[in-house]
Image (cartoon, rainbow, N blue to C red; front, side, top):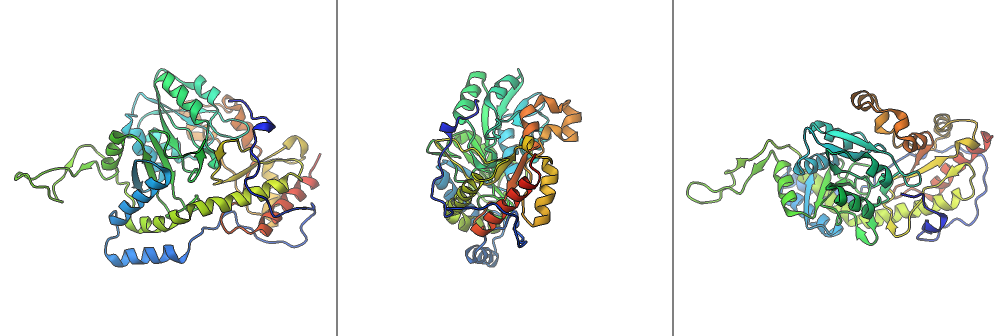
Amino acid sequence: MRTPRFSDVAEPSSECAVTKFLIHTPTSRREVPYFRPSIGEEEINAACETMRSGWLTAGPRAKEFEDDFGAFVKAPYTIAVASCTAALQLALEAMGVGPGVDVLVPTMTFASAVAVVVHLGARPVFVDCDPATLNMDVADLERRITPKSKVVVPMHFAGQPCALHEIRAIAEHHGLRVIEDAAHALAATYHTEPIGSISEVSCFSFYANKGMTTGEGGMIAATDEDLARRMRFMAYNGINRDCLTAAGVKRWWKYEVVAPGYKANMTDIQAAIGIQQLKKARRFRDERQHCADLYRALFDMVPSVRAPVVLQGLTHAWHMHVIQLELDQLRIGRDEFSLRLEEMGAGHNVHYLPLHMHSYYRDTFGCRAEDFPVAMSAYDRILSLPIYPGLADADIEYVVECIAAVADQYRR
């Protein structure tokens, strides 16, 4: 996948309030947290009502949440589960992943997204990232395919949809199946199509800092009925409840274990929160977009910082706002830059240390840092900045002031 030209980069979707921004060292220190959840009385009341109902585990609210979510992402089949990690494991199992199978995964992702491949006895094959978007690089994807490759699991890094058309074309050519890791991508669209409606399976996360939350939790969106059926009963101990008694009567206690499944169902308490959060999900994304627009306007006036690239035709979910430092213009590295920001109270994080650099994957699968040069280079430069509903413009301005001040102090 080529690096986008300036003509490919989308303009901000809305006007920013800022018209002028002067770079200076902040005169008063403030604390800006990296993240703060957006929970209202609606979620609190829904959770309390569920606890009073006497039905706490998976039940009518989980079913209602599944239906609402399916309508939201335009997916015919949805399964509420305990986490996005559980969703990915169920999807991989349903596609026959096990010993002797290779699964193509991004190295620039969170650990649990690849651990599930190992838990199933398969081998993860890492793929480098695109230097502009940090999504899976499609050219490197094609180079990494092996005779044992069966599934590719692209992740929509930070909330920007990856190159799905190109990935699907490669997958079809090589007989691979696609599972989208959509943990970051709630309310994102790929050329007007909602993420969740495109591939056979898409897996979402409702962790505390995601586009919406149930505390912990996840959702599987599927377009294939057979896969959906397999994932649904495997999510609840491999139990098939479509069984009849000897008299030919269907009873709730009559079931059959058809496979050694998992305990991965979502509770009704979580689902009750999710129902309310989903009603706010588009507003949450729009508020994140406002934050991203303001960051972009301010960073246009800050040297030594590369703002996120957003490609035309995509709706970014803005789960994260990841900048890249121009280290050749600075006298310090990213780690010391981070320490200076921490001293100033400017919340931030780093996503991610590429998985091939972690000791388990390095030692078990013989990974070398130089095998994934783009991810290695990006890791040394990236910083994730606060971006969430309710984040004040003044807090964004303060974070950028801090970054600008540190960059100015340590400029070559």
